[in-house]
Length: 223
Image 1: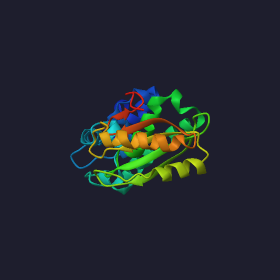
Image 2: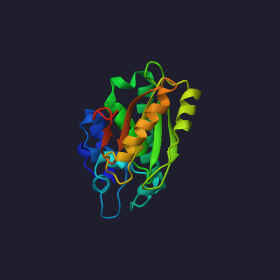
Image 3: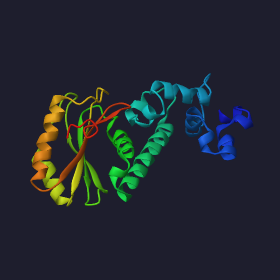
Image 4: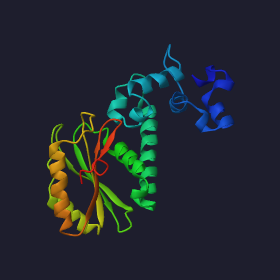
C-alpha cells in the first residue's frame, strides 16, 4: 500500500511538493490504484500494468474488457482508469471544438487514437467541421468485421448536409494495430471525396489509426 512507502517517496506527497510533472508514469498510475496485491506493492502493480499495455498510451487506450483481464483490478480501479481516459477524450474534444483543427494536427491524431484505437473491429468515423474548420461532431458511422467495413458515401453526404458541415476529416482504425493504408482505403477516400465535392464539402484528411501510430493521407500526398 502507499502508506507502506516512506513519506518522502510516496507519489501523493511527491506530487503535492513538486507538482504532477515530477512523477513517473508508474507513480501517477499508483495514485489511481492506491493499493497493490499480496506480495506486490502498488508501484510494482502500476509498472506491471504499464508493461502489459506497452506504456501509458496503451493503458489509456485499453477498453474496460482489457482491464477486466488484469489480475488485481477490481471494478473500482477499472472504473477510475476508464474515467481518466474519458476525461482525456473530452478535454481533447473540447480543445478541437474551440479552434481550427488544422492548427493542431497532432491533437487531432491523439484525439482519434483515443477514440478508435481500442476497438476490436473496424470503425469508420467522420469528424464534421464548420466553415472555420472547428469540430462540430465526431460520429462513428460504420462498423465492420476485423477485416473490412461497409461505408456508404450517401450516408456521409446526408450527415454532412444535416450538420451543415463545410469540411470533414475521415478516420478509421486497423484492429491489427498496423496503421499502413491499404489500396482499398485509398479507393474509398477518393470515392468519398468525389461524393462530398458535389455538395461543396472538402475532405481535409483521412487518418488511419493503429496502436501507437496514426497515418495521415494528407501528409503522404494521397488526397
